[in-house]
Length: 222
Length: 199
Image (cartoon, one colour):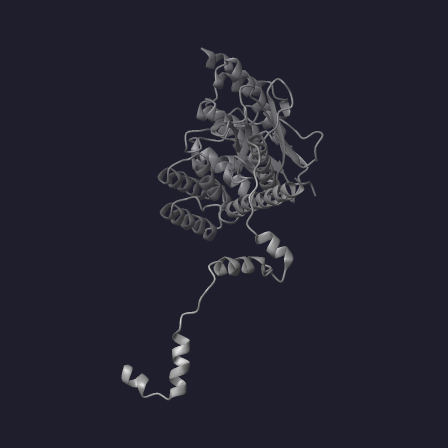
């Protein structure tokens, strides 16, 4: 009986060690070669784009992240390439619009805005009206979210423009976003929800002149 | 052959003849010989423990004990992998402000609390650029009966894109966070901005 227990213990210890080592090996594979699950052709193309981004001084993290996201979502190699290429293109366009001093976060947020249909010229204009060195990251995140939720692109862009001119801070943009999101979930028309909530912002952030093309809520409802 | 034998010296011929004569063997001689060999001690290894470890032996376990042992081994292996995984991805930088609806409370100040209410899900995790979009890297836990899943994740300052994964394959954005544009794969993601510490 005693020998049997000893033998069982040895077998168990051996198997535990093996299982743990296998788990550790899996982690090392994932962390050491994150793109290892891509097929060779896709991987080569993705790495070329990563190199291209590095050479251009663009943040390449979003490209690698997009490839890993595609792997996680079981996308085809072709779809992954298309998605990564689009990220690279929008990052380039974002830097052209915001200038060489834009931070990596601003570029990433601006790339998102471009993907929802905001033009490079609009981004340039937003960058020009901001207060001093204020980061555009949060305003652009809110802008992309609003358009994604159904707010008309022009209305969203002009509203963000107006708030930037009024010196709105990140918390103002986030507060606006939360209110509009709640209204949209409750069934309010997205454009109307935005315009209604803008009117409720503190006067200090509405100091900028009304943005051309933004209709008052009453008119928008009709 | 005979000529060569005849030409040999007489003494040599006598030795050869004696050598060719059949030897009478006892019928039990073979059995006695084998028994004597068996009684000889088996040569042992110079390292007794090695001999003990390499000696083939068999043992049996009841099916229940075998199943319990296998389940325990798998669990230990998975836990070991998870622990190693978490250690390898531990963030080193900290942030003082997080643009996220769920601000950190009881956990470390630089951690971001992710929350999702999903009563129907049996397993929820968060994936994003901070964990390589690995659905097994950051599992969420649910300790309440209303299906609220939570996890604290240390994030480095910057803009992060993420999503929740329900039951290993169903990707859903965070309903309490700003949405990112179409991800290119038919889903929506969410974004969280971790601000750099004020200087």
